[in-house]
Length: 285
Length: 285
Image (cartoon, rainbow over all chains, first blue to last red):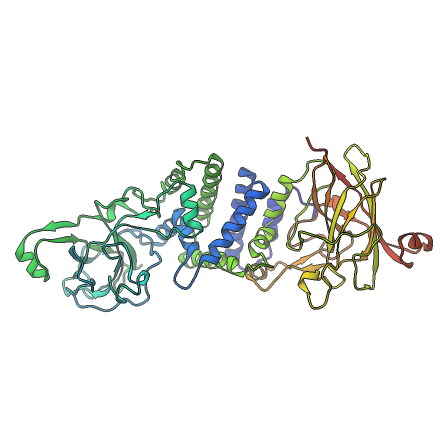
């Protein structure tokens, strides 16, 4: 009960000693030690601590039904990627962040359907297979896909411009574990810059852009689910994603194909862009 | 651009390398290292990280013009006390937290006035001196005082019950550096328990109470200002203040006096409670 700089951390850690849940107790103990460690290291002035309080307050206040600024903060500090990587499958396709634009229900589509409902300028075919980590194809696997349009906007960001479900689809692999669908080549785009995280990025002289990518969640019976992206290999910002989500294994060639026969097979006109992406799922233990 | 568990922290620290303000850069580097250290230590599940995101979101959303839940969180983790102690004067009266109930303008009152506008049951006199750290009394020093009533509520918490300014006063020391005023003995009270911090305290099995105290800010020309409390020495919870604000040097005896002559001098009836509290201010460099 005699507060001092020297005993503060042990006193606060000790205040959690009667928490019934041992995991909660361990988390709070670690949080207190690291938070106090930060304060001991930077020795904030009153003005600086007040600015931190105001920043956290603004994070919460910026959140709405369609915007989550606290996750965005976790994203730009690389923490979302750490947590995703910790919890993602340890073999097979690497995972990356879910991001804020996933919807619970993507519209179910047939193999070969287009998820581009607006006849974009650069048609693109994405195809590949879903495999177990033993290399065996997985028929009936579910592929949930979502992406922004050629201008870098998701349907939910432009409800007056894009029809709901544009850039989204739920597919199932065929008996050989194959999938294919049509779309447009996605664009790089900025994370929201008009909130406290945007102000932080500006103060840090960091750009807000994410390289072009398509989101996937892939599921198959008896296997781990993987949340990931396919990145357009030569996209701008692929070396400096604002949310640190690029893993080298997730880069894919989006190559222009001029072969009429292949174009016809996918139901597009040549020339078209083609990305071939396989997903490998780890067996559940 | 190849995210990995091993390189994540250096990559995020490095993203702040071009921040023009070196102090901001140092703060962010420390924040990232400690936040990542926490994540590396506790290895949160997705559900746990989502709970943390929801908690921070709720902190911000609970804040209003009259409530600051982020400061409350800083309080119950002992961080407010660390920052106050870092920035408070290093000799003389020790500082403690400002708390959320200070108003910019306390009503100016004459020495001997009562700050209890409701004729409370346990009248109390607080008196003492303001001194420089060389022991010389400081005439004309300003004493800004605020406290809760005998039920543990500040005026701003009960606008329909207490008149504005109840429990508040701005006094100036006399030519001998003395001050005295009348009040009631304050009560211990709980911090707000109906928000996310209250839920955290409950999960931690921590009580939400603060021991009885009177707040002071003391100012004198040429001296450091001190923000502090006087605690009622035998109050409940003095050994376990929910915000860790007790320093032993700030405990004061609130003694019952039966001496009619002293009572008359202070304008109260015997018996009355009396606390004698000197404030010592450090000279400005």
